[in-house]
Image 1: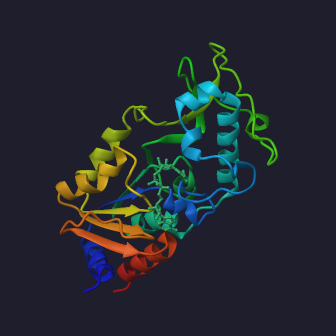
Image 2: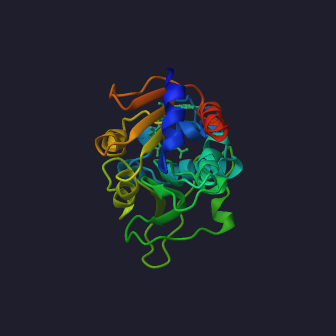
Length: 253
Ligand code: NAD
């Protein structure tokens, strides 16, 4: 039997399912992953070097400009069939939770509720100094394709610089996010891990944790990312196509 057949059979029987997602699920919505070469203004930058507290300290305008550009890119993107797979599965009466490493809001815009964002959100800036969250005015979220440097706005409370509310390398996850993820993962029968390279810790441990709790893990990726466990299935292909196929197999009698 193919992994698709086994995955379909596991999903048919499951009543509690978790989607665990990474940048690859948003790739078909036009949001580049860290593995994609950037074009235009940001071509010469390595995102991983812009996404640290040290980079922000050294050049806040460059890092703020980068995140404003990403925020704009996300606001122009639309969720794809892979994001819609979670609410589609929930509509069959199953309990479906979403735990994501993504900082975009495409799961929410596809209709998923209570999404656990392990790495924070582009939409919720906070103060670099006092950590209070802040709102931006529409003018403050607009960025031009020609301008990389944008001075971050100041915190209304302490006048510190605002920074994006995302988790940078070596920073802790948002309070409660890991616990919320574990709460749904310990109970699920199937975890569908979509578009993640499995290198960013501690999120990368999630498929293994789900396996340890007895779940079947279905990986969906362009390449084989399975860990070789007995309850693991590997569906290779684009997330939107693979998940649409998988869901169509469980909705037929
Ligand atoms: P990653 O960039 O390390 O890996 C992306 C994975 O997705 C790869 O394994 C790749 O093979 C796979 N992939 C690419 N296109 C795919 C497709 N169409 N269908 C299925 N799989 C596909 O991403 P990561 O594992 O999420 O970890 C890196 C960090 O990047 C995370 O912390 C995340 O917050 C951040 N990030 C987020 C976004 C976003 O919010 N959309 C975008 C870029 C990076």
